[in-house]
Amino acid sequence: MNVYARPFSAPLTRPPATSAAATAAQPARPSTTARPAGPARPVDTFEAAPAQGPLVTQWHRVENGKIFCETSLPIPATPAKVRELVLGDWSKWWQHSAVTNLQRRPDGGISFTFSPLVVAGAGPTKVHVQIAAPVAQKLPDGRERHTYAVELSGDFKGKARIEVEPSGQGSVVKSIWDGVEPAGWQKHVPDLSAAMHLRAEGGKLPLLRNTGFAGMAALLAGK
Image 1: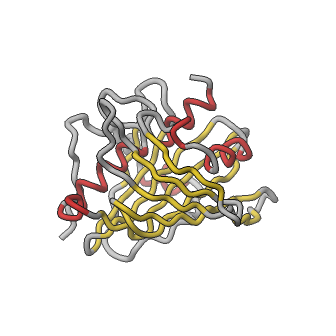
Image 2: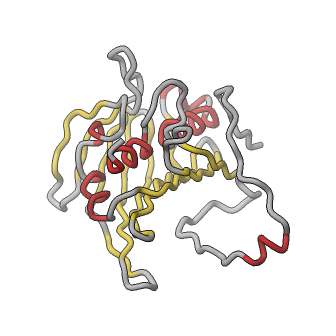
């Protein structure tokens, strides 16, 4: 049985309901994310930072202790600027985080040890991150989507990926976990671990602004 944990009291603001006719009139938007088979997954839409942050869309599913999830949000900058930050020091844009052992890989990617949340000098979660150089894919409009293969180990282990593609005058970034398994005490509460990860990645932690990719959006917007 799947339980979708909601560890914080702050409710998520869901988009307003639309009529069937209005929904049918909207063009379908293809998804690049292969979601696991099974019942429909919840989709949460909320502002990363009330009245200031970008609109974040997320979904998650836990199967056999493994987390499948996606965070998607617009970034007010060109894909080139976003890609520069993806292959840089994440602590420069993911607020309240820490990066150690940052190294350049021979393939043009990077590796580092990441603590996504550091409070009072302590970062209890440590993840070893390997990000490969991006692979470009042509889009129908002639522009390109860049996909980064990501390998996680440590307190979370498994495969993930990051996608960066143009959208209007800016970009959209997607962070996708393809069956990531929590380790240590977190493996006993995978739904809670998934919810906490999404809250951090989407910038929706109480009292802590601009964590996750919401921090990237804020940095590139000059906020």
